[in-house]
Length: 380
Image (cartoon, rainbow, N blue to C red; front, side, top):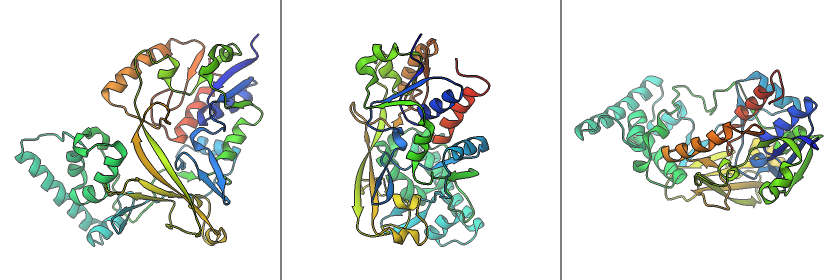
């Protein structure tokens, strides 16, 4: 008789939701994490009364009412609406591309004027490609020019994208930017989902609620004592790197990573928005996050005398760094497919989350996936 029904490796969102649903089903769970805190990448630290997103900004958004009601049953979410701003030199533009963006860029006032300007630039790009004997976009730059034209590409896409991926847009595949959200309305809401917000009191309240009643051990490295951990439970829920689980036998999957430069500033309002993207290639960071704007609104902003910002730098990932974004090119996808073949044959292990599935996930799809797993019965 094992001590636990499930050993859950990783106390991030997938592991925490799984632990919650398993305990509801009467199962005994042990959750371990090598970090010294729970929550994975949604972990927050309270600094000067501000919940700072330590691993980058996280905004919960979904159109799935079941998912929204589930997370709100753990902790109430606020009304935060994601409306990022892009800064190019001294100019500020609203994102995603909408009438506010086009009005600022070209001085146009109507959707018809904006459509005409974009179509003119798209046709120019198409003619240049035709003259060069190019029938289909060969890279991200050509694809973007065909979709949105030169002005928006040069000011708002090229520099930011090159910082994100660490290479020129002419060397990036076209599929990365197959479509761009373009709205011919004055709407700065980044998401189209019915629901969005931030947990009131920060994401730690969500994680703590999900893990309440489960046995949790932090600072515990699964791979440092794998046999002992495995012996403690009937089944294993693994949310770490799938290539590490299999000893990198087919090689190391690749990632992009992000580093953060955090600063506490003696002012109540630094940039007036939670998210400001810096789209010039010469600016080394991709964006600045001002964390208080996720949870403080109106006069409340000025009742908190200080603010905390994080500058984000996108870099190539190396061993020992936090893996963030899977690089889903042909080579990595083929390698992951070989690991997945092994995973699919496992009878005792459930793999879940962005590292175990080598897939970028927003938060809501993670929650939905676990809820679906438990619909009708406990996972086998």
